[in-house]
Figure 1: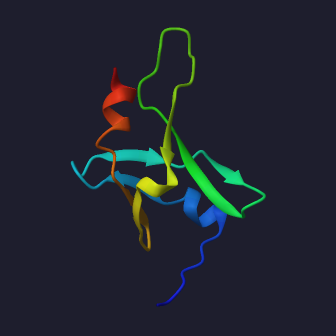
Figure 2 (figure 1 turned 90 degrees about the horizontal axis):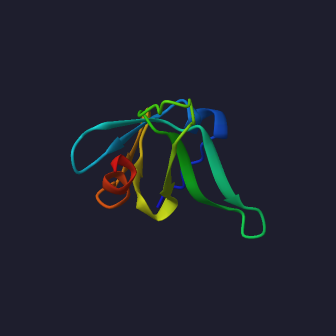
Figure 3 (figure 1 turned 135 degrees about the vertical axis):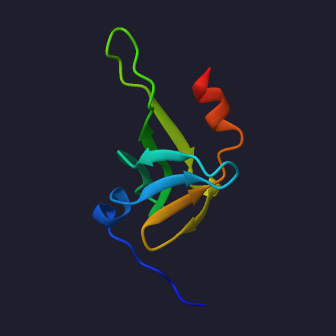
Length: 87
């Protein structure tokens, strides 16, 4: 099995897409990293919805929901957390 390596800058330039609906979620704004375990815990994406008070809402996607990191897109299973973020 071949191990793929990606830089943080490369990951942030990839578009995140929900595999269930094919909807574009956005681009990675930040990563939550476990420094002791040397692994990514979750990816953080700005929500498309803007509130009246310019409060930035973010969608946090657990890394175990990432299904595939491709050449230019990241496919995630957003069945549960995307519905909660829209409410």
